[in-house]
Length: 484
Image (cartoon, rainbow, N blue to C red; front, side, top):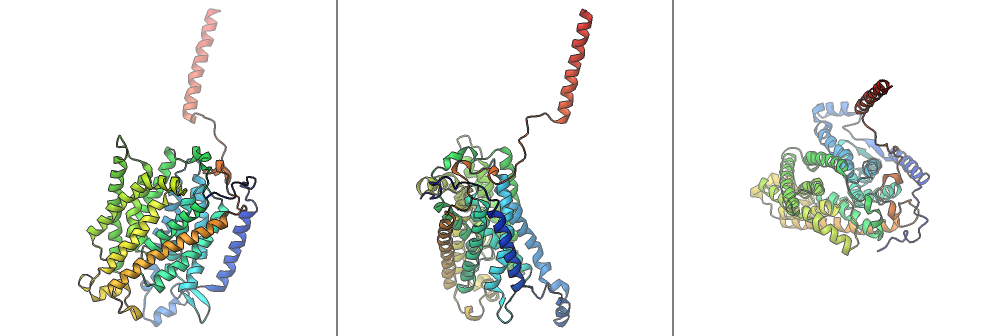
């Protein structure tokens, strides 16, 4: 499918001096107005907490801030540092990778607080949304879906288009999350379904609609250099270290959160070894490809998201990480080239291999683990706590729960593909200032860049060089005097 804008030519102008400020100013003003109308502090962040804790015989230690804030900070670092630096691998698009990640996450979290608030915490009597520390964690989760989609589009779209991707991405995320978690009553603590599966397929669908048949004109820039890969590896390490917090941040206090950290930690370690193994095996001389290490080493945590708080057992977590490291690395080796050649799908960061497929498999893994859960393994209270078997869901048997978990995965795929296709067609209109085919993956299109420095020696070497030449001058001068 060709990009209809591309055939027209003249509109391939990256001038966004009007459109980008207009979108940023107007949407930020809209956020201010909507926050003023709807958003209020919850009881644990409001100044009335002092009265509330006395009335209910609580202490400040019972405030959810002290329990959730460490996890929030870890997730926040992942969103802005981890995702941002992971996208700096392109040799001439590091500003765009980390800078546009900063932009769309900052807008996305504001819109997410509203969208998720309307679906989950709107007080129908007052018409207000109460937010606290858990709301901030969920807003970051919501942003993650759009940042994953950004990975598939990296270097090929304008910042205005990215804002549109985020606006619709957060909206679609809030709707599919409500369907999966509230209507189907699925459990998905780490977001294999609602975050990774949705975000991956959302970005892939947009990229497919925006296919550029002449993208090879920017092939010289579609790659990495030594230091850009090193910066991207910083992002990988931040994500790798903090992912146990990501998968456990909103789980139940106590054993659920404890178990989610352990399971994610183990799966991550396992996926690293298999990623290295397959990467080395794929090369004639056994050398390791940094692309595989930057991405496939994280696949175990993505697939563990849904089942992280379940009793999957430590060796089960190892198996998940083991398999995901293999599947993800094979994806980079064979599936991504196949998709581009056969389905005309240009996936810059390979989100299909790190997010879409591991997220989908993680959803189905969670369904299997849920369907096989027994009272003997969990205890009666354990089943109730882990799967929220209360109210109208108290009598739902575990086989049915597993079926709903699988259905939730299908919902996330459908929302990602259909929503992404619709947004992709919107982005095809020639009004967004996206780059021409021969100017993709280049920061120069949207960033003021420092002047290219001439090849100069460091000051110390320059001084030493000067002294050497000075000595030569003196020698030559003495020689000429003697000759005279």
